[in-house]
Length: 495
Image (tube, rainbow, N blue to C red; front, top):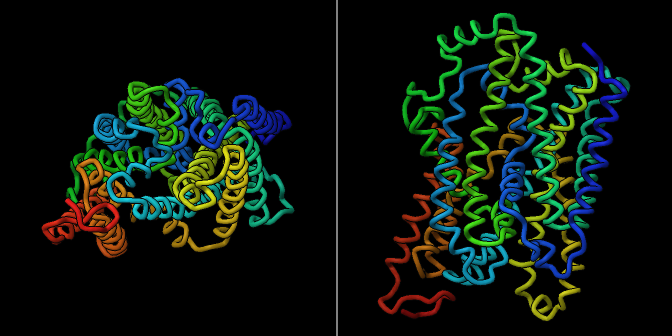
């Protein structure tokens, strides 16, 4: 054990301070709420690509993906192939609709087809989902940090709950500095840096591992022969085995269509590109980047298996164990910075997208919102960002000391809603439909998925597919029952 040295602390402190300063500089001054949330000074597609990947990468990914390869094989990589396919579909089916007219959020597209009520319903569901899901992700960031601190015998006189609070507050405080002041430009440009730090942390782990494993080539060949490097898996049933090749690729594609085509935490970044062409580049390139990212961290997991062999540990505990026991002084701080980078990029994206949806989808349509000046909208946007940052941090703190079941519920909440969102947006692309039918389909999809998640053994990559099919079926069925004269977007008879 090398210990966590002053050099490691210097790396972490310099990173936290540097990323906040960089975000403030790149964010600059904003002239309006639209500039604050959508960046009227457009951003290069390559930076948006990096921001998308950083946003979808949490601290859980940093720790858990190596654990999957250590404990099993490379079946998780199948999902990323599906992720790429889903993004290609969205880039040509849904993304063009976002670049028609002056949309401010992804949910504004729903208003065109179904009216303002459905837009507000979708926005409110998105906000609730993000608070729960990203609140628990912020809390989960503290778990490996505390494990690593304990491994280094740091803060030995401080209890675990206090360490959790400190880690959460520090991560949130640094993040809110640049998000609240710099808006989406600060978020995107800091994501670029944070993805770089995160990836460097992965390569540092590889660089430390490789010299420690004798006869690496022969042992890799033996691991491959034993199935440890198998990507495409055919064991198990299609409906119940998450890493069956068809389940993973099909499920991953549909999941990615929902997460990157409807979830505003991703779509907000696409709005910051210059054109539809650049938006497509950013979206498809992010799919390629995720395949490479998963390959990197699955490689770390395989080398951890060659180094440690089998251990009586959970998969997400082996990488922190290696960091504590084997990573040299200075490099430990860099890996911790990578862990923090993965967390901060997710939190910053959540704060910015929730705040933007609140202002544009919920507040702007109120009497006061319609009459507000640009300066009033901008000042409100900053206050809303700060307020949601406080609530997101509070949600993370609430999870301290809760049971594992509560944490798993919060992490899985997107499983209840992604299918309904995708179904709703596909209906919007299809054309006009009654508000009642769209709402019925959306709510039915969410309700059925609660049963599916808790009451069936359906493989989790298929959750979004199941939810979207329910939404489409119910909405089309209800719409088919309307009178011959039809119902217009506000619920009135029409054609």
